[in-house]
Length: 498
Image 1: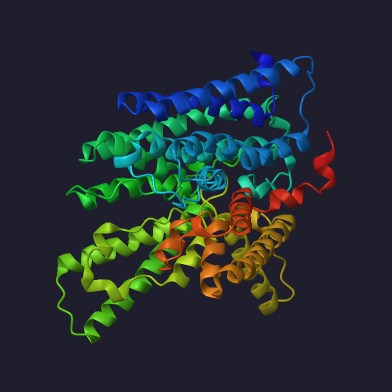
Image 2: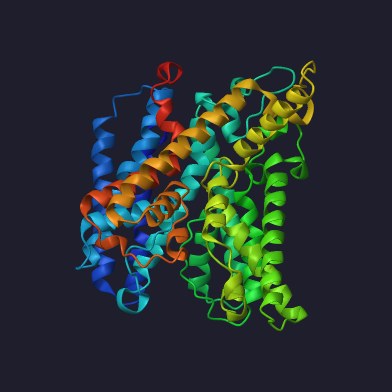
């Protein structure tokens, strides 16, 4: 067993994905959809056989992977694992090409959430939809584990996953376990499963059917944005409150992993990501709520207290959803035609998704911690302009943001992210002949917020575009999930050292 666990994470995940195909196969058998069931079953056996052959071929190799090889394995997972996931989808649907199936599973595994293929359960059964959500759920867990076990030891920029520079100059690298991937997996997988099951049970108690509640739970925990449930129950407010409570796991890694923050004994309310998220959510919600009320008064719209509360909750829920790059909107709010003119603008939603959620979470975007560091840097620069002879403090709460390397890497990442948005906007605009649609799609892909493009109002079927466009869209989603800086790390000399 130990040699198998020491294989590249790409090969381990290949075996896990193959074995997980047995679950939708059982679901299809229960629904008497034998063709889909056999497709998943045969794909499961084929994947296990391929993995066994590779494991046998590498059985005499006992070399431990260095940092560079771990990073390559991490990237290869996003390039090739969606191909394996797409096989049963392609074989089960006659009218779907393999590239379309691959793009759909890239959307799932990167937790982007583009609905490219219509998986209506009335015609295809529940197995395919379950497999799509399982792919996104597994993608969220995979990034949780790899962000801590692979990106942290590379020491590209330790703040990226929560490793602050300690005031006494100590390093967390000395506490790195012998097999960090397996160690992190053992710690994080139970937490990930527990919060998923917890959300599933709460949604079921709120009146959602068991299967739909499971799909929504996997979608929320992975922040994929897939919306398998259309809120066909009466307790809309209760359901959205339950979902909102689990949004917090995408705001900071300190809520589920204390490996780094234990060094500084941080409290949750002192977490800079949590505090910044609270400020952003309340500020944006208040701004748009005030704007909507002003428009309603100007248009002489009759308002009552319950309607105002419903509207305030709808904005609050939607703003938080986009900040963690999930992108689902409050059905309690958008179903009310009274406030149709008060909807949050697309530009504001883009800004929220670009900021993104917490580092080392399933959320995308620039990430809250980088934004916090850039903010602290701006404050220090202003202080230096006002008081040129002052000496900036590098201890206390600002130690994380006051580190020169942290500020530099945050700025580098931000510029790379903006450059990527510009580049993909130009590419997609050439296909659409519309720069606004190209901008919306590039932001959606790079921030892993697929629903943003659909909710922007563009009636464009991405599946009908040409092969080059689909390849570029898949590349954009993968780069957005890898956070771009991972690719730059490949040319860093320190990564090549053992």
